[in-house]
Amino acid sequence: MGTRRSNAEHAYVVAYDIADPKRWRQVFKTMKGYGQWVQLSVFQCRLDGGRRIAMASILESLIDRETDHVLMLDLGPAEDVDLAVESLGKAFETLERQAMII
Image (spheres, rainbow, N blue to C red):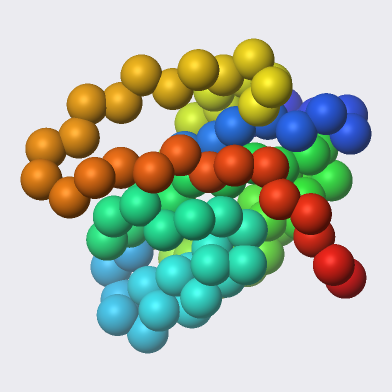
């Protein structure tokens, strides 16, 4: 994925397959700081370019490149994304824009 330095937020789906339970927990805890947990190893995120780069850098430092896999699916500008999600079972909730206090 190319490096985007824009301040415009994009919507992402991040999914991961981590072989080691300890690394999986580290990735899960990291992802909780960047998006909303959707399913076991899937998060939805709204990120500007800087936060996407920061997230990818942290994830890169946590995973084993030989056995683990992280997918970051860029759905496009968050303001333009109209998610069409079919959810079976528990209801799916989209991630709304929220103010972040740092």
